[in-house]
Length: 147
Image (cartoon, rainbow, N blue to C red):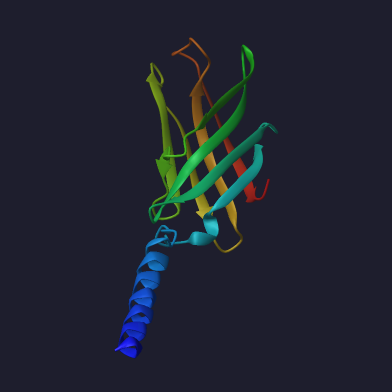
């Protein structure tokens, strides 16, 4: 009888250990299309100023979670930037568009397209100076992966 009791105890311990270990596993997000795009991207605008983006995997979807764009305006160098760990814009078909607002000259935005063959990001922007919804500043940019 003791022998069966000991075997039962060992069996029960094994089962409980298996359940407790499997329930402690860290849950991971599904792998998105083009996971090689996840990371930091940096480059320059057509006016030689800095531009930065971060792309993250959020629940299996690629998302821009940070951008920082410097633009020369009549009021000086202006930064357009945001960080949001919940995502700012989805990357769909290797492209994204960040809507920044609307003014008299149309939409203010930053858009980009990833080239997975040479791992570059290129795009364009149209932005208004702070407090000005009449004059829009446009340009292009190119980025490479890395800080």
